[in-house]
Image 1: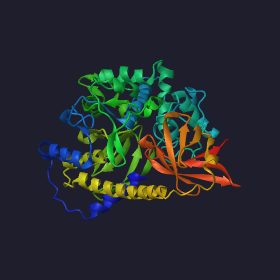
Image 2: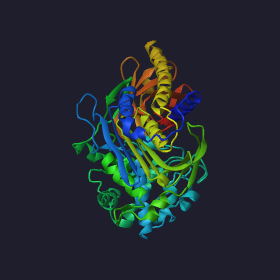
Image 3: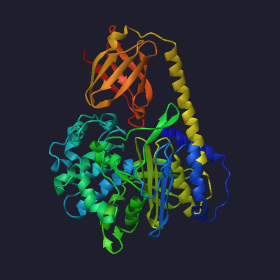
Image 4: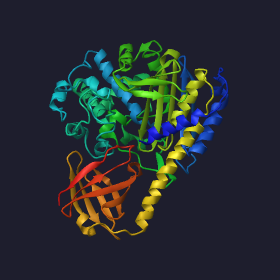
Length: 510
């Protein structure tokens, strides 16, 4: 995947990097971070960034940089809303742990106790799945498996849970970690069963309001109604452009929250203070500790400073070591946004970084730069190193796209008359799609559960077509059709790795 290649390139670049000797570098936070961030806005082409650092139960830095939307003058401030993507998961896991502390449920209960209709394709696994399994990604699926079907689709939450049972696990149950958004949605659907309140209402009443997170929104449908909000951006044909908000409320417990650095600072301060706000115990300490217990092995991770450590997963949090410090962290990425939340409990340090373009790794670079400043590590200029790796990867992608566009320009003919490609196709998990004819041997694809999206197909010769999704989040790729006895039997549909890595096999129905 793209992120792994970028990380490899970053590490290689650091092998030859020369930097200053270790020193107390906390002055970086006071004296240099504004210059560092503003330079990154230009170099990375990021419209807006919001940064918050808390240390020893105090806010050290809380500041917005840049603008809410490209081409408009409104500046980001500490109350400007960004979508936080998968940083939603820690809220869901904490809510479940709070319910356990209140004796409303046990994280070791079977899922079927609360959702009697819940099932997996593996019946034996269906009978054994417990709530904890949903919150730590160990059902046996590949990372992002099923997300093309679920992400930004018109399926309801109940339909997502039901279709989870149609997904064929790539690995035996509990044998391998695989990041599963639909599992977190399923966990969130248990909250109404034990509280009588929806996931979003429970979070508002038991976490947002008690912490004073007055601007935070649980649902994406509410974000466009907010006055002080950012707009998402991504690259379209190498130009940074504003894009529509993702409609993610069918997957809400996995990814739908929008918040500001001011509100997120209250969340992080409470988590670092054992759940207390002043003298009030808002979140039970036991619930916080429960989310930080290692549940599954993710893999080994090679840090840029040369260390190699294990990466584990708790409940809604990644857990790893860095420079002798235990890090509790998570990233979040949805259409047009990437973000980072980092806790270093032993140092009472918290870092929040929100950005309104999904085409940047600066949110990662700044996280490590801030930690190094507090950990008395040498200055490494992560932003430039990450940027160089990003540009290398982007250039390789553009080279591939150019070859495909050049092939389209040759007007290569399909293997059989274009009319034979049209018709209805079906995938057992997703449902149906319809291909219709266009001009110049082009085709158009429409999907059952993404009614606002289409794909433009241009012939590359033979059985291959260059596919351009109308929603840029899904990317550009190649759709190969399959044949048997001279007749089309199906097509492989591939979307961007950001959504899902493996292709879908659609069979031709008529």
